[in-house]
Length: 439
Image (cartoon, rainbow, N blue to C red; front, side, top):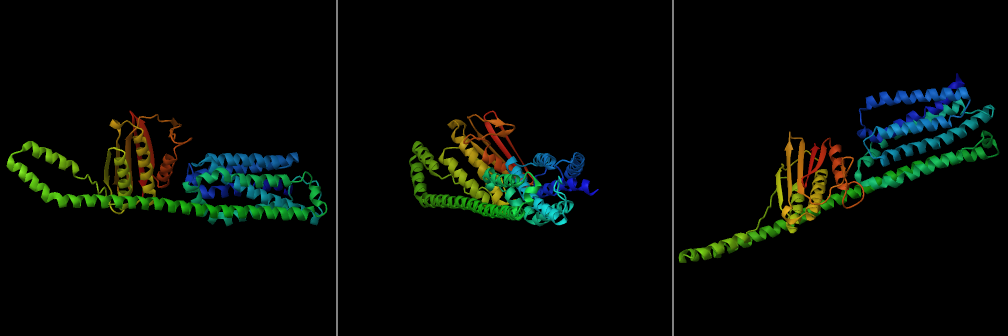
């Protein structure tokens, strides 16, 4: 019974590894955790038991079975998440790297136990005590990592500002995996020679500590970069508010000057009327009406939204692009203002850039926003565009860079994270974006 239990225990470490990988991505599951666990856990557990029995019957190493089950688990893991492959793959590789270090340490512990108990040298698996040690350390690691992985790591995964770093970080856990594979001796007797075992234990512990330290540094760096990116976004909003304030000051000055000149203008109108010069009166009125500033001072009660809309309205007027805003938003909104302003900024920036590339007579930007059922914010932005819209697998491609539009991806992510949705459509030369944010 003990002999058949050893390979099963060695393979069963896939279970805590899979659980650990799911901790930071719980909000990205394609189905409920209960249904997912009911489908995956019995499958993986069955494969571990069956693989262990086969290895016992064949008296073979569990390396091939462990590699196969691990690759299958990674495939199931990445396939059950609504998240980029870079993020899910990097998380899976990181967990594999940590468990590979524990595997090397457990291998050394197994040899030490075998030497102490004077067990045969040709055992194909870890001894039973080493298998128990292997599983206990893995489960302790899962319990220890529960809080940071469901808090700090989850925030890092959900933040798009750190997305580019995922493209390179996967190299680090891959290096540690290969190092641990390279350390595995071809024969167990190698570890029993001289002081090789002591060195193997020291190197295994050093690799494990070094990997955990690198992961902690990466997490701290991610937190710092995300905080800086958040501050940059807030500074951008403050800049928009400053620009909005300057525009309001200029408009107020124009109104003050117009009021100051009102008496002179009325006297001139009275003189033209007394002389009966209707043509002169008409010409004078047309000239002064054209000088009346089109202020558009106030768009809605919410100051943050008003600043963003005012900023892009000024940019649109500078480019002679008709800008129509219909906003019905109260001063306080149930939506996170930073995310809301990011969505508005991305939508209006895309609309502005598209309108600049459109014929003068077709240029227009229309934005509508209002609250629905007190907790839903509905935003719709429509603009004309004469260029070619590229679409792949239902996702609009960026015209400024290779790949998908970063702005559109950011909008979709913010909408989904709030529990809302977003749709984009291009038809008859008009691009329409609709976003729903939930409070």
